[in-house]
Image (tube, rainbow, N blue to C red; front, side, top):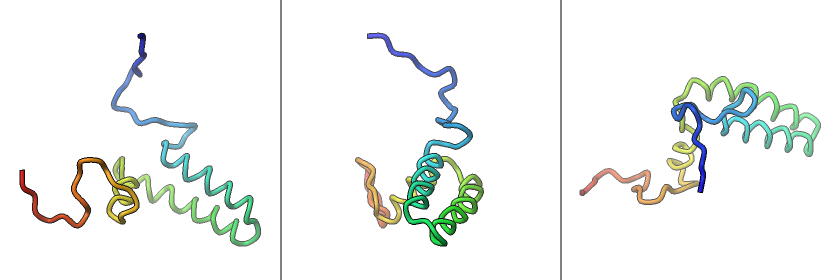
Length: 88
């Protein structure tokens, strides 16, 4: 079985000029804005234009960890977001 590795392992996945999570947010926001249309659609596009520069000031992995903190996703073998004591 032959597998290929990228040349630079430390670089994040980039689609066009967006990171992978930014690309997902951009495409879903534009898709929903096209369906909804009107003032709400333009508000979604404006929110996207404000959100992406703000998100780029945060470290990599910020959105998945934010979703974890809000309880929307769970990481396997990790404690919950409200855990304060750890016993090894």
